[in-house]
Image (cartoon, rainbow, N blue to C red; front, side, top):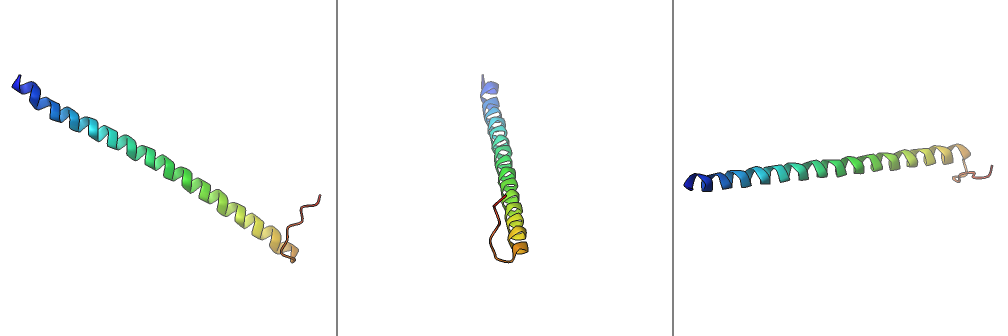
Length: 64
């Protein structure tokens, strides 16, 4: 019975480490998503700048 009590803290520690690892993975996934969104936004701004710079008036021609 004493041996079974000694195993419980080890199991609890292992479960806590697993939970922490899963949280780290979730945070990494969210950060990667944020990085992708930031890159998309920067690309969109570059596209808008290049389109407005070629017209000279500072406005984008949206007429087709």
